[in-house]
Length: 332
Image 1: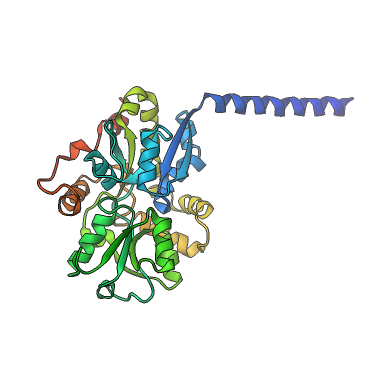
Image 2: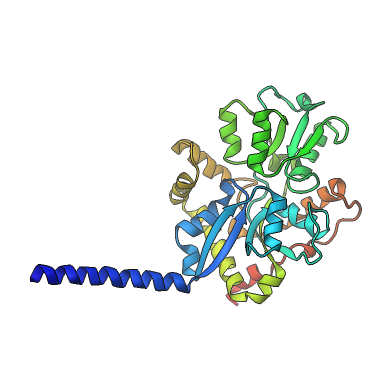
């Protein structure tokens, strides 16, 4: 009888714990996030894996997009509330220069992901920039994303757009890698760890984007202004969590490497350690997820040269909203 009582008590405890877990999950607000692939997702991965979002009352899921066109279609349709995307994409779509035009487009960057941590990757036979002459580069979209960065890097090497090489638009990192491997293009901008993994396979890293173009705002965390205005509690919870996650990554190497290990396949412990060092180094993750204001200026200057709209550089305030980060820091 005593054993039966103990067993029933244990079952009751398990049942109570299950009910509590279910009740807690039901009180969490679901947030759907859409991102490109790559290790610069580390802070967001950590926020999910370590329960940082849940502490702020959020249940966040992260999906990977096929490319910027699909990503902004899904954001504008309301399929996703939160995004990590190239800041340049936000500028392009705001100015009606994206793959599609939206009359009610109101996406803004609220925090920074990284400051241009991408490599110029080339096929094995392309040993130098001169070797790309007469060949093809692949980009996500022709006038947005990191396409303008690659155009500028090539220009710096004396290789002119619309004269010395062809350009094809194929989509996100996976699509560009596929194009390189199938030899439909010979050069592309690729994020980590795919660039390092490809280098092991014989591909050549010819340059680091952040070194070549200087200060740059790479990817940014973004939301629709209309959604944020109607969901102040949620947007502030997201902001606080992302800031905390970036600070945690910088302060906790071993634990952050463990998150990378769980989320990134095919890399040794030594390679993961080196990848972490790269992520927190020059051009890497933004400290405290702060937007790189100088880097924003670089993006806008490049767009004034290579984007569809030539002329004076527009004000950064058209594309960024810093009030949420400011409130998160002051606790207001």
